[in-house]
Length: 323
Image (cartoon, rainbow, N blue to C red; front, side, top):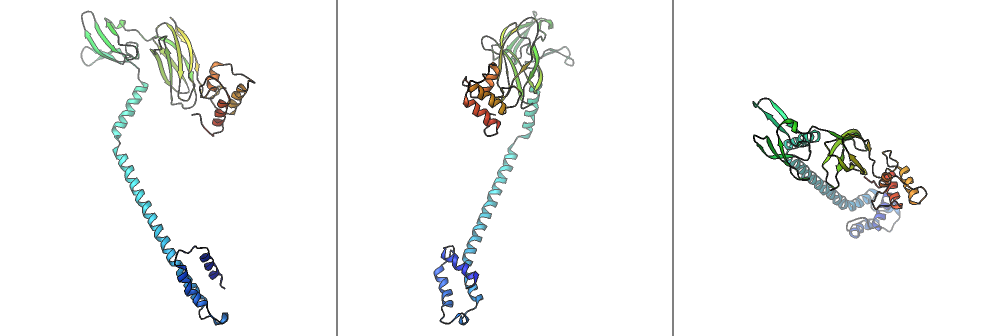
């Protein structure tokens, strides 16, 4: 029997032909049902192959119809998605977006606190204050009154209450005085904000500054003398806290903060850090530095154990990131 005929009959036996197989093959069987030998077959090889080809016609047309339907559905969905993207793009207020970015950049680089200017002729202006009268949290002066005694100014300050000022001369306005300054070192994103703040005994945050860059200068101005908690923070870093005493003279203090999990302080969280944490967890070599301990305590439960080791190790190997 011919090889193509054998393959076709094998597909029939396996049930792969989605047609009325019994009916169609009956005709093929009739052609083969002869009493003589192979030389006396009433049909040719081409007749048999042609008959079997008819078995596949219905299957082929069914597949082609399904492929066409799938193509049509995909084309329809793509057209729908394209329209949604165009509608979303056209709905964006691009002018407002540009204005938002412009204002954000100005706020980022501007001096905090309200401004007051004065003029005698409406042409030449003189700045009275551009830093909220020395307090960056004085964000507005909604009330002011000019009297024979001087200029009364009421400030808006949502952090620890408004203030009432009497300005009789520009010398009444305190000049900026550096209370504490230095270099702050951090890692990861150079464009991320680094915040350096002073908190008083009541937990209020009257003084501080924001800087940008992984190694940049900072300074806190006009802090009143006293004891404060200094906090340095940045996204994906462990906040560093320390006590500082502000006095009459400026303090020079360099600061450094490290990423979560970076117990070695090199700015990279790798297997060296995980091994160091593992040694501490097993009691073989304890981490005694308070800040390094905080970096190793990645789940913030006050202890360093195998849970911290596994999380730092997974981060170092790229299996599960800490940040």
